[in-house]
Length: 197
Image: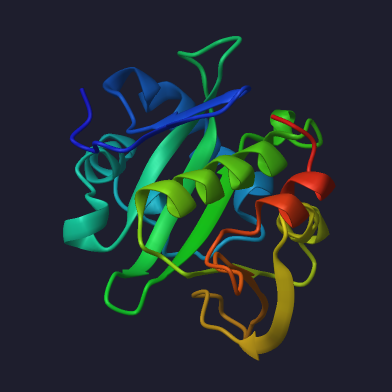
């Protein structure tokens, strides 16, 4: 059992702490260069051996560590890891959090990213006091940008960002405002763009 108490579910996906049975799938993701070509090189799941990385991911606590990385599973095959969902840079006093996600390359183009973002936003809006969600995306990762835009994120700016590459990198920053003037989340604008998951 994972030490991560967060469990998120929507019509299509289950997102929760990783299990020991996920080791082979996590190892395969780590070897897939396509998965990490648009991701920072310092991600927790890439550090050390697959076993060490899995244990680090399993023990992350959002409230203690200000981040957690969870497994993403489709309900049609709830034991097969299809990707990772990340909540990070959690600042409870500032009511800000960032999200990230990555999936096995054979799962790309199937709507999993859009459904994952939708599930993360539902969790953030209903289970936290967060008011602003950010996501950082390399400009060449247009598929990820589309997932964010479908879910109501707005492009904010492009900035220099240290992703651990040998070269200077820039990232597009997207934001999602959880509040409207009436104090309710932006469910209407988000769900009208994104398909139901």
